[in-house]
Image 1 (cartoon, rainbow, N blue to C red):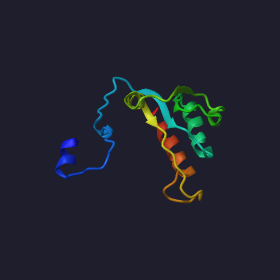
Image 2 (cartoon, rainbow, N blue to C red):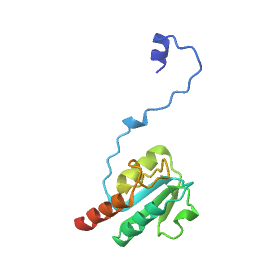
Image 3 (cartoon, rainbow, N blue to C red):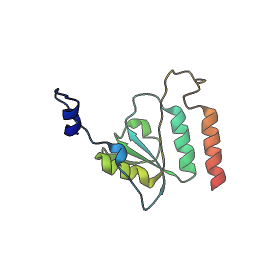
Image 4 (tube, rainbow, N blue to C red):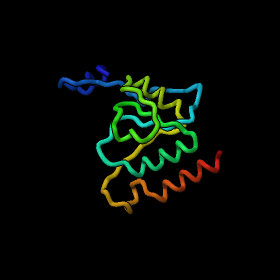
Length: 129
């Protein structure tokens, strides 16, 4: 990277981070689980509905990061924060990862998760079993 900085005559102090997108992870197994990475600072009632239904389908729930009281009513495995490469390896071994966001708080907002999406997701999983 320093050769590029020399070419463009970049003279300010810089911190160069590795490109983690180039990390290739090829798991030897796929566990019947869904993984959540990070922490939660908002209500996740809709997501918990999915997690409960997945649990009914014998799909385990795993949290990597902060073991919050938010998940105390859902059976789960907890792992503290992991180095990036190790976290990616753990994620790659799981069938699913939970990605959730709420932008407006409006239940009809098209970019956010809805009960209709939850129902169709659960129905699809049930049909595969």
